[in-house]
Image (cartoon, rainbow, N blue to C red):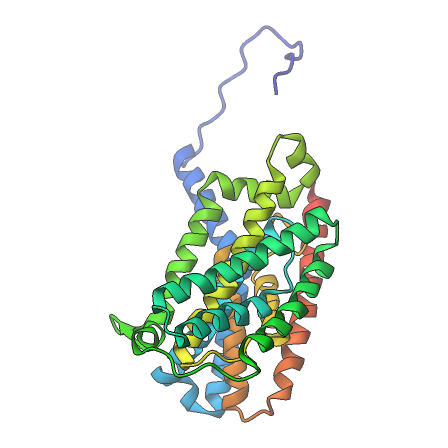
Length: 350
């Protein structure tokens, strides 16, 4: 900001003594220190520390937790949550909300596996499953934008509708057997890692690049941060909202397809409310703000791994499965409370 200089003496002031270290060196040191402090304060770092602590405590009780097979199973189990979480996180950052992802997961799985069981070539059946997820996202957006139903009510409504459709589609019976090439899609390995982990890595890279390095990602953050300002700046908010809900539906369906290939069946009971709860929790504890504008894909990845570690640790420690929901619910409440405190601290600084 330019300002008028204050009047002062006409004599030239003595030059200040130069610092011992040059400005570049001091600046570099300050930048490095700021960067290190920033990394330590990031939510991902905190979550990783929690993962390490839980792993250490569990391993002390049962060393089998640290076996290579078990750690690989932890990563494999987090794939579904992470893939679904990528689309859900993008939507929440953009100011939306989708509680139908669990039903979309099952809808994509049963659509693709049912078509396979009727003889459709499996790649086409997979595309049909993803199209079903896109259709669910489109319906969500239409109900919200045209009928002016709040997102939480609209997506809960489509959640229950999809649950009914899923049961009608298969008569309540799991779909199997499935074609062997499709099973390789979910049970095979590449370069020593299960294919499902590669799918998760590729999905994460695509979404990270989309959010952090594209104009679309900037618009999504702007829309979630301040919708009125986004409208005032000419953003095509309706088009962005539609894209976000479609993406959330497609990633949920894709996760269902990958899960079916992994377990070898289209399961009617897979997905549902518990899957929705876990995905929303992974997104929120990963640092995505429920009020929009804030969040990262790396945070969602660490959040998904943390929930998978907790799930696995409870099994290894022989804790009854009903305690899992108690733990996840408690973490969800804590995540929302932390998000509230973080937003308040952010605005207090301004």
